[in-house]
Image (cartoon, rainbow, N blue to C red; front, side, top):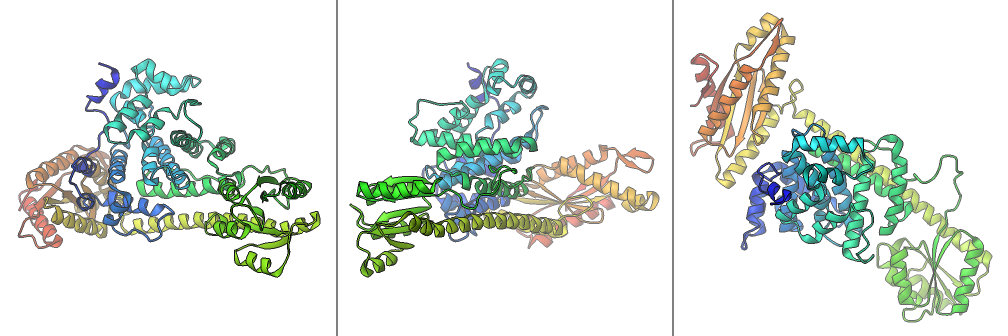
Length: 622
């Protein structure tokens, strides 16, 4: 049995749980509907919000998605399954036992890699952008799997790698573990149902130069996109001294995906803003980087007045085409592309995205006005400066040229001075477009920062400042959501009301500062002892509320007893001594006679009163 086969049998490997596992199992049914999947996803508010946000991220969306049903329909069954998987792993494996493995940095790097894949997927349509996101997010999941299954051994792997980074990480992994993160990650993703069309490029993108794929193949493009995404994630995590070098290297590589140098900085800036935005949503650390809009210009280089233009000359007559190109060469610095007919010109324009098109009115196969109309029908073509030339400079041709969308019309026998004058307007257009792009990037940055500030304010309004737990307002909102989810699914719902025993005596004897310490320590203990799916809130004074979805009475009582015992065993500095504190806990479960959330909490309060009356430091039910 190989090492990978042994790991596949291990229960320690990263595994989706909860709603994500339910979605994975549901999508394996042949007759499952999107409506059924949406109903399951709705039971997890966090997953629902993330799917809706991701559905609204792409530029292809013209109307915002506001419901989970619409998000599921737009993203499709396979994409929702993969996203549920990715977010489930993120929530479960934020920390672990491998001391040398930085779990937070791993997820921060993976998040930026996923967002980069999504953004590249919007430009290079080889797969759905949301599927590209999950591929980037899980591209390095093999590292997480090894750190989870073999924490001590992988600690040694990372220690050796940092001492000898000339060898790739995979080589160190094979020495210690007889497998590597690429091999194991590929197996895991295959088991999770991610298509081979995605896993194959993921398995090879870290190889320096794959040579067996055609340059223009889908796999080659996918592999290059993964390599670009990984490098941009490295840039986001890099020290300040290395960022400029990494940015220049990334921009140079990005030209292979037809991302021009002048657009690379904006692309990076927008991604970094999105990274910070998602980091706040997912509670993942990110970095604040300077703008990269113009990183290729050195500080000691004077700014040029006019940037070189990409100019396409389309003319069926080789003599006049070469003459026009010769005039452009006299200008110097411009990049000139020839085309001999209208169809070739249209294809070339979509490939090189020229700033200026100089086309003859009577082009073969597709004449000048028709070429102009075809270009203006595209988003890219609307930004191009189109100059039509004709041998016969009459008013009929002039009107036809401008009606087709041309910016200028001139005789074929134009002089170098006349051509230079007409290029001035194109230069101004390019400068305005660059300025607009910079302003747009700055506006997006400002909007992202405002969104983060607004979320912080909203979070502050729902957070207890002393303990960091959700406050009473947030608790009631969460309980209402849990109540609705339980109503739809028919699952049980339990709550606990927890009260610290003799808290007033602590305040009166040792002061309010000691009382605050007790509250913070109690909050930390409850948060650490509660189950992952439970929500711990402070609802006032020394009282806490724990919301327990999908929990029956016996399970709730067992969980409450664990919370009580752990808090009693915790040593808390009170005055000059350290001692434990006791709590009284009332537990209630929703039944057919429970009218609403207020009635449910009131029932738990009554149980708490029974615990107090019975001598405190115990768990009671109605």
